[in-house]
Image 1: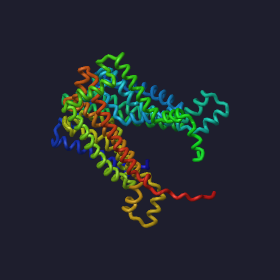
Image 2: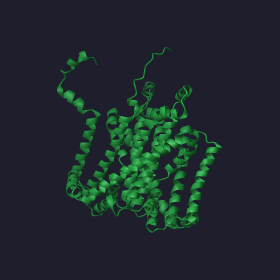
Image 3: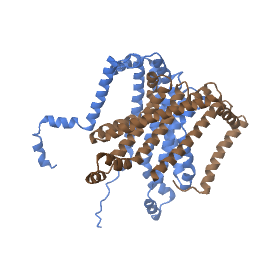
Length: 250
Length: 280
């Protein structure tokens, strides 16, 4: 991205200030009901109260373990399936379009079936998140291993590398950047789909709490949860990007 | 292979030709699908608990006995189609307009693109209960949620398409005396079309996601109500049939955008490039 100058930074700052100012003005003048948009200070107070409760941390823990399980399953299944498919050119030609085609259908459609099969607890969210994240990881694994330059492989073979050596020193380093991209996309899809699953139907977790506060019309608490999710996802984004740059630059 | 050799080849056994045709990726995909369906049918009929799983044949039957005759369900499906269309139309109009505005100058791009990226990084499902609270349980909330999903990929791809114009082309236009508007009209916009279509396809996928998420979340009416009724009554066949209908709707929408892309991308209509032999 282009270098940002003082002028572009001030435009961005002005935009944020405008949003914050509009929020403050609209709630202070009472032109919008506090039910729909509570005052910024009451949201902050609600967030402060929220983080002191034990139920907050247990909900966060439920969501995080669900995401961790779903992501782990998606990585293992996605990379295994993706790698197995690329071992044969025919299998790649046959299966890659199937996976890519399935991925354009919103898997959310099948969410009621996940509930039917795995119940309303965390199991259905693990399965749903893992299924959603499987696709980008598998697709990127296929892309990573099937676009390998043939001459690198023949060079390795002609220098007498065993198939494990070839994998370790040629295939894996060549595929790693694309693999990592797949995992990053998979992670954020996993994050969003677990939250979505919890919001639509569940008994615990962050998504459930947002939906529950909305049902009770406790707007300040709902906004506090939403702020927490936004802050978390922005932090996660920054962490993942810097991690990715760190691996790439090695 | 030259044409002269072709008559010689026909003497090859017909089964070999047939085998070659059947081994083409397309037919293998069809075969794969058939095998999966057959396995599901076998599993559904022999092993599965009928409260959770239903063989494909019974799902098709359930469509004709339990989905098609119920006008309320058909109405809900048509509502879903209308909401997706409306949300997508809004996404395209606003996505292209905002994208053009942001991509117009380097300054607006550096200033506003980070804001768009920041908004896009927010997991929007967290806002779903808020959207329902603001727009109510009716179609407005679903259209709004579909729009907020679909608009960002379109904005980003329009901006990206306008950014990646080759400096050489811009300089050529300028040296031939093109005005700013002429440069945008004749150089930047045609160049942005392939990227625009990437955005339109992604935007469609995201719009479908947004509308369906909102449909499933609202369980008092529409698709979400019926999926909940079928799932809670442990009646999987109509649930699978309803899901199948939604999947067909989603695939149809995706295919429509893909066909539009194939017909409207200028690369296909571009006159063949002149190949000038270059001596090194």
